[in-house]
Length: 420
Image (cartoon, rainbow, N blue to C red):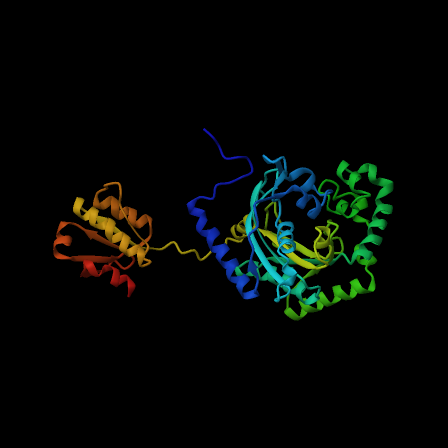
């Protein structure tokens, strides 16, 4: 027997309605915020992610699914969405679109070769937004408030928005130099990844999962101590907007985004429930990336965005025991008796479905009792029984499965009955 690849999952029919509910809700919210959907290829040039995500990241060094195609080109299954969206923005010259900033969202599968654990898969579904073309504290606040709004719209209440500023390029340069001076005397006590990153991207050391409890991490300099006046002003205005919007937040000076192109606003949205025992506490994260477009040979434009995992959202809903308002109802099940009735029902089903009626019938030649049980399993609102007598008299009883009441109608008026 061939089994599913490790780190992937089958989303069975019992679950796909929950997925569709979430995806439809996200689409509706994006319309409210005036964000337009973009769809990019599942695979891209490896160089896009090496440059766009960063050579020193775990994603690029350890987790990407990379292969050579028949043209000997290095191709990678996308591990995240931002780089591909920015590539598309540059390639299609979206900076020339009259409506600026360009507000985009995406939703689709991503791929990372990482250790399987609860809420984390090697193929996972990522939803994300990108607002490109405006460096304004107001749109930073909009994006952060949107992230909070998304989770609240599904009924989640135990949420904590954690924010920080990582400053502009000058502030980051001074901060990186301070981190090198701080970690250099003790770097031999850290893992090999941290040692390799000391002089290439020292901020990534602060994100290390292996060495996170070391004293040097706890006593490391804070980026907020290195912000210049411009960065402090930008951060203050973002916070003022959040206060005006009534969005609660917690400041964490140790929250950093370790990629070179991130600037100013950084944030994570976390589960803040003391009773939560899940392995995943961070629901989504994002930040402003003022250098990414130029890094990918694009125009001098700025952007901000975030990404979330649908799988983690579902875990959070399960943890909070939140039931989505998924429609499991089914309009009509047709019970048949005899070959003529069975043949007639096939045509009748076609007519009903073309008018939007959710309907089905038995195809296993079960007895009437077995067919009625199938109607119950489908949670059908109504049932009808068609036999030779019903066909001859053009008369049926349509039964309301909830109330148990029946109503006699003409068989050839069944479609009109549901249309009304």
